[in-house]
Length: 277
Image (cartoon, rainbow, N blue to C red; front, side, top):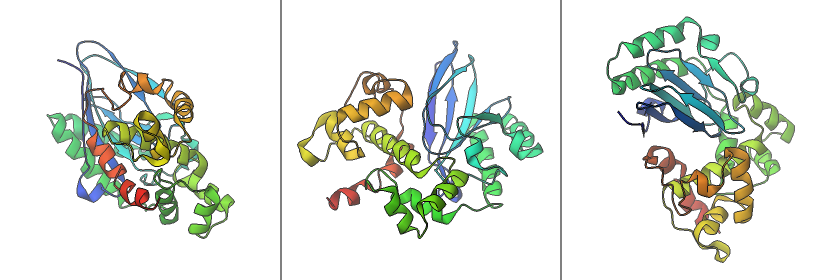
C-alpha cells in the first residue's frame, strides 16, 4: 500500500460551494501532510474516525497522518461554507471536531461513511450529507461577489471592491470576517498565492506581460510584483520556498498528483482577465 491522493470535482448540486472532494490514503508508514491556506474551510473525515472541521488558514499546518489511514475531505470555496452557527473568524487556524458545530449529525455522518465500504462510495455519502446541510443556510451573496472580484487575475484595491458591492470598506470587512473568516486583504493575498499554485500545477505558459517569462512570468500573471515578492509570500504561507513546495521544479508542480479538479475552475477567469491588459 502506497501513499496516494485523488481529487475530483464535487457533485453538480455542490458546484457553487465546494471546490473539490478528495481521498487521501497513507501506506505502511505515517505521512506528514502540509495543509495550505485556500481561503475556504475544509471537512476531513478519517474513515472509522471522527469528522473534523478545518477553519480558514492564514499559514501552513502540518498534520501527521497514521499509517494505513484513509481520509476523505471536502474543500469549500471562500464564502461558501454551510451554516455553522458561529462566525468563521472564530475558526481561523483552528481544527475542531465537526460535532462541536453540527452535533449528532456529524456522528451519523461518520457512521454512514464507515459503513459505505469503498472510499469512493463514502465520498458520495459525504456529498449527499452536504447537499442537505447547504439547504439550511445560504451564503452571503454580497461577499461571494466580492470574492469573485478579489481573484488574482484582476488585481484591484479593496476600496474598489467595497464600492463594487455597495458597501463601505468597514462593512465589507465585517461581513467578510463573518462569512469567510478572513479580511478582504488577507483573502486577496491567499487567492493570489492559490492563483500562482494553480498556474504551476497546470504547467501554464506565462503571458509575457512586462516581458517576464518562466517562474517570474507566472508570478506576475498571479498578481505579484516580481519573483522576490512571490518568494516572500510562499515562505510566509507555506513555510517553504517555491522550489521546495513544487518538489524541485519551478516550472510546474512535480508532486505526482493530479490537481486538475482544483485548478481548472480556478483558472477559468484567467483568459478574460489577461485580454483586458
